[in-house]
Length: 376
Image 1 (cartoon, rainbow, N blue to C red):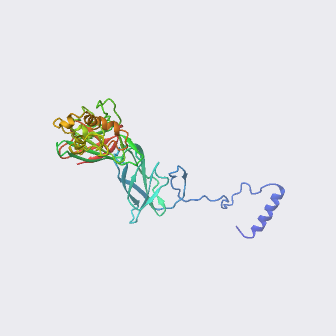
Image 2 (image 1 turned 135 degrees about the horizontal axis):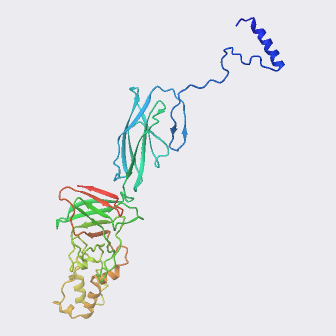
Image 3 (image 1 turned 60 degrees about the vertical axis):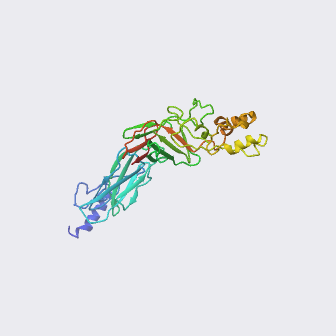
């Protein structure tokens, strides 16, 4: 357009607007649009954050990140510790160091950055389902399609609370003996009645037991087998001395019963009530000598006194012996003592369900979930 015409056009425009019209309406001079230009940056995909919020960001990156999980735990994992391994790549390929971010819903609050291609996670006890996610990261950019794996764990809420400590053959009888030990605080208690221990050839369900063998030895009362800190549980393939399926806690008076019953599992033979000379001062001297010298309190046995006339004919002496040196008397005297029962449970399974040389034993809770595993 000739420069000389520009002032003329300005004058005409002013005149036209003052008259009340647009004299340039419909006339196209090929001038640039006065509208705001659009941002032509590349939009990246929507990013979902662990909290559920989303954001759309702009990027002009010239590479694509990809992530894959190379090792994951088995579904239904029997421990609460799981291990993931993963790898990342850049397209086009470039010799650079990639870092990662991982996330497990319900466990992590945010994506966890790491330079390692491996993560070990200790999950809460009890069965649950989880989803693990991992994404590659480079130069502030992340893989917007993270690799993910959903899995379950089948551990008991008691996992790690009770251990299978040993599996062996008892030296005297060559019968199976399994030892359990609890890992509890001083105020914890676990009821293991109804739990099950299994080998490759079968298993055994832990029954009710007897906390305190009664003085009348009549086994009508049964109790849950509760474990406390410091306890030990011995499960033997032998038969119970008191009858089928009778399991019990040994106590300080049980040595008196060894002359009547055979105990496959060892119990203490000693007795708690050896008297002093002062206790016996009102008895005749032969009776005192018999009690102090002839009775073995280390083995809870009372020798035959029929061949000792001074004792056999002394009714007061015989009454003293009969009233004190037996299981019933000991039970009545000590049953409420805090140390009356031992820190043991003796459980008689009456069967062997393990292989001789190699086996895997599993301890399962009432719901069939893994508490512990022992391989030998």
